[in-house]
Length: 107
Image 1 (tube, rainbow, N blue to C red):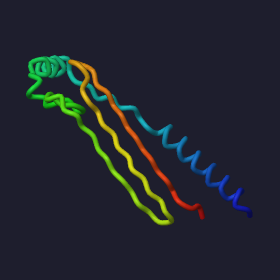
Image 2 (cartoon, rainbow, N blue to C red):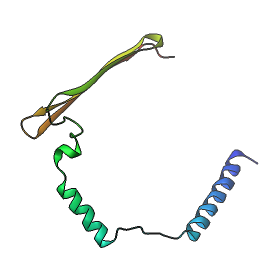
Image 3 (cartoon, one colour):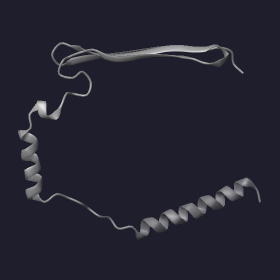
Image 4 (cartoon, helix red, strand yellow):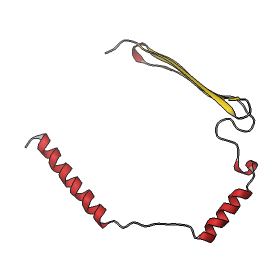
């Protein structure tokens, strides 16, 4: 028996198992009651921005955030990279990234 025939048999067995498990599965829907949904929406509307926390990228202080790094490897491999996000005006932002790599000799 070749590897191709063995792989085909495993593939057929796997397909049969998936079809059998899908046929026996029941769908379950979990939902909030209308009262619980209304309570959740009211609580979300009442929150202040300071309670939620700072936005993920630039925060409320509008600072520049970023990172730089480098690597050195065998056979002359080396590189540097970096990225940054900065605020622009009241509601804009700009993101920049760079990378320069050399991988030395090839084996």
